[in-house]
Image (cartoon, rainbow, N blue to C red; front, top):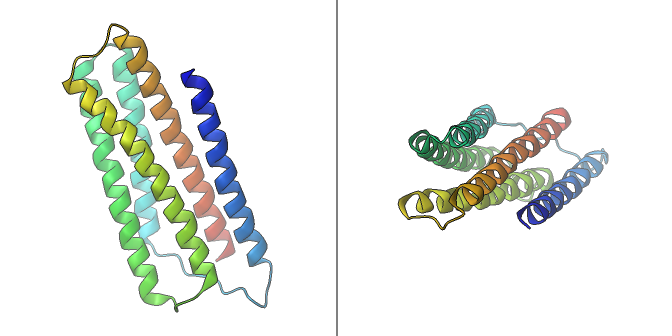
Length: 177
């Protein structure tokens, strides 16, 4: 049952972002209304932090596979810190952009919508991450290994998926700016 829900979640997230990216690309095709935006360098830091998150959660998954609960917990904590830093980096990026973009700029508005939607999905991943950290402090049921491995695998694939979505968003903005 986990897998059906997980796949349905990833497909629906893909559909949301595909629709938003297509709307942005179509909008950018109208030369009369198109005003390119300047992407702040802060986005490189955000990208690096998200890639590090993806790597850290993968390390947690691998530690769990070799039954290293200590390594697993260390990598989960690192993932949560990196995810928090990613969100802080995004907030700083939005502030940098807000300082240099006139109010009502629809192209910049699409940037905020896409990156803001992505941030909300990162918060969703952080919720699952928080659940796994909480469960480390509490005893698990009898199916401890199966549930922990399944949830961790799904979290890792979710995080990798969020990285791919981020790279697609970044590429679209970089190519259209």
